[in-house]
Each structure stands twice: as structure tokens, then as C-alpha cells.
Figure 1 (cartoon, rainbow, N blue to C red):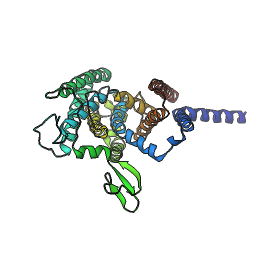
Figure 2: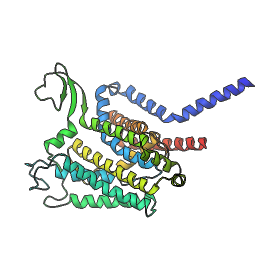
Figure 3: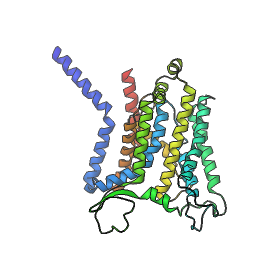
Figure 4: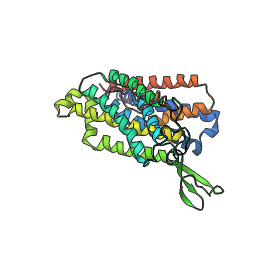
Length: 361
């Protein structure tokens, strides 16, 4: 009898472990399939490419993740990314670029356009938080309306004379360098910042793009904010039970207002870096980014029911989706099949998340 109970206990533990980490097993299987088809996929170069692609997504997901932890959602994130990309890019075009949006604008200190873009997004985030926290508008509806409004604002700004709705390009070298250059190890010269001009014949190793470093710094700061401050404890408390948090003395309205504003500022930084990375910007930048970020957060263990989630989990979720995107493209899988695979992973992740929650209850 005792032996039978021990076996049942062991089986229950194994089953629980499988459910807890099932999405990671699925991910490992996908990577193995890709690696078997194209062994060159598992290389340091590809890993660095994936990190570079993931950097801005990680920053955006940090904001989305915090909102999901409170039990909310933000459907306007992608459009705010587009707003930041267009706004910062328009202020950081090279002075000698012939199709400059502001021909007579003096060269601005590098940080000002970036801060302006982050502030512009912060305003919309504040409005989202105000509608949700003060007027009690459901987060889905408030941010859906904001999504449409932000896209309208971005399109109006983008379609300005004299050139109308033309892609914004011709960036200032400082902006271009931010998005494309890196820190690298060059044999015989040590660490080199930038493109390594004059070192073309030397061996360059392990280039880490500046935007990866920025994403890492942001991740550390957000980790401290969410885990080591009263504000962080409050967002988890609100996600777990908003009414209980309120009774315990948490200012729920103010915390939500701050969370949506902070998330929008992160979208602004992510959008600015995305424009620098890709070398251009249009009003359609960021379209669908909020869905990718939400999916990455859920895959990374952030509960769609609120109150549960970690910063390392968010990073892992983003990396998983980046590996899947990059890997499936690497083996020339049809974009349509890629959408099916990603959709299946999202559904599986949410189903497992709900099952874990129900099991705990």
C-alpha cells in the first residue's frame, strides 16, 4: 500500500513538472528540428543575430509584462512604438539629407529627440491609466480606443508636408551608430567600440550591439523596480486581488496610473531603438508588436489572470519567440505556416497557464 502511494506521489510530481515546463519542452523540440534540418543554425553568429532582433522586443515586453501582472492589458503598445519611431526619426535626420522633414531644424543634442519620443508615449500611457484607474473603463476597451487614436496621430504627423507619407530615412550618424554599431573583441587590439574602422584585416569576435546592452540595462532596472520596491510589490498585489490590495492600503488607482505610464515610456524607448536598428520609420511601425509581446510574456510564465510573472521569464519568452521566428525563416518555412506554429504555441501556453492556476486552487 505504501509503495503504491509512493508511486502515485512520484507520478503526480512528474506530471506536475511536465505541465509546469511543457512549453519549454515544445521549444526544445522545435529547435532540435530546425538544427537537424540546418545544423549551421546553432552558431554564435545566429545567436547574436537573435539577441539583436530581440533587444527592442524585450524592452517593449517589460512594459507589457508589468501591465499583465496587474491583471490588465495594453493593446496600444504597438502603435505607441510606431509613434516613437516616427517622432524620434523625424528629429534625428542628417542635416544634409535632401528629404528632411524639418529642413531648417538645427542639429539637436542626441538625447533630446529620444526623450521627446518617450514623453509623447508617456502621455498616452498616462491617459490609458487615467481612463482605467479613474473612470473604470475596462483595460481592453480603453487601450483599444487608444490604439486607434495613436495610429491616427502618428499618421497625421507622418503625412506632413513637404514630402507627405514617405518613409523617414537619412538618419544622423549618431542615431545610425546607436542602432547598428557594437562593442567587439578584436585580436591584438582588445575591446573596440563602433565599426572598428581601420581594423578590417583583424579578427573581430563577439560583436554585442549597443541596443543589446541598452536592453540588458533596462532589464536590470525593471527587475529591481518590480522585485525590490514597494511599487513592484503593489502591482503583484493588485494582480492577485485588487480589492484585497485596496483594503491593505495600496493606492490601486495611482499604482495603475504609474504602471501604464511607465509601460508607455518603455514602448517609446523600444520604438526609438527599433527605428535606429532598421534605419527607417513609417506610420505602420510597431503594428502587431503588442500581440507578440503579450504572447512572449505568457509563454515566459506571466499569468494572463494577473499576479504572477517574473522579469527573467519575460526575457525567456521573448527569446523563445525570436528563436522560433528566426529559426523557421532560416529553414525557409512559409510565413503562413510560421503564423500557424506561433498561434499554436500561444494557445498551448495559455491553456497550460490556466491549468496551473486551477490546479493551485
